[in-house]
Image 1: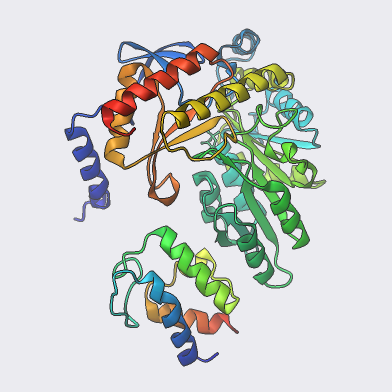
Image 2: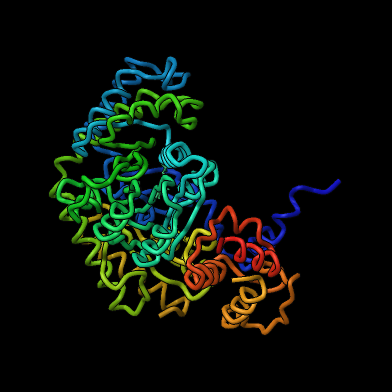
Length: 399
Length: 79
Ligand SMILES: Cc1ncc(COP(=O)(O)O)c(C=O)c1O
């Protein structure tokens, strides 16, 4: 018998070597207690959270919590069914109404996760003989959506408008085309030149899907994302998003103005063949989305935090993923996985949690310490964080 | 362009990507013999696509494991 686990041996060995060096396992951390959107207890130590996607700090919002508790009492703990059978409750509809209003769009479809929203929409929209043209640094859920469908998949170099245009122009006459982009790319925290890219996509007869997972609630005058910020949201055919970041719970969605959009509820398999979100989740999501519409002050404070941390870390001598802060994600580039893991551990001992990211999730084989800021981080906390980075960076020999 | 001319052009294009100076035959594999990672593959595919003005989709790339198969595919894609 061939042991089917043999293919994982290189990874098992890499992990063993890393942990044998005495490093705490970066992928097995437990949050023992959560005190606020920005502070938790890990390994008995009070820790500042700088590696969550809780950008707008909605997880402990009193109105959001109250809506969830009430829904638990009124509707029970779960729906035990698919959206298209017994799993659509008032809360799912309320969520879709909130999303339509939030984006100013005609249709909204709520999925059980953002991963499934990408999987479902991409694999269903682009069928046999159609072409998907996508950025090479796309999120795993986008790639998996491509893999699940029957379309031809054509990647182009990250954020390269010319490379994208060349590929669009070579697609055979008459074939359907779907261009897939992201507003914020979550590894380096850089944004896409959506306005130009969408213009080129439209000139070449393509429909456009933009994943705004990391920009919702924060970027754009109304928090609708990078497309709104660049003034091209009305040219986007499908916006994909998630409740697992700024919204502060779990779930995914697609919003669109396409007149035939509703048919997707019947043909999109990751929507049909899974249970719908629990009532408490959709009620917290709907409440949170409505509050995010009025989050201008929080958005302004989050930008301040992002700018302060970016400048602070650069001044201390760290290498960052972008020259200017473009989102709430600041990626600190590590020289290699070993020192990245050592730095991650040194920060944890300082009382700071960041995200360790490594290939294949990262572009160009980089090891990154990804910092994601929250609107609830105080200006003092940001200064504390910069001090922790400086001490840990010196201890590990990175700066 | 016929197969021979295509092969000649591809030989030229692969040169800067063959950093280890591996002696390339029709049976040379990209992942195994040349040890290319996904980024190198993308850059090389882009170079071929731009030179021949074709698209080699990921679906087609999955079928191309060695150098000979690449020449065949590019010859065919030029129509
Ligand atoms: C760009 C992007 N799209 C989609 C997702 C999936 O979201 P969810 O956590 O709701 O499955 C994520 C989150 O990891 C993401 O970063």
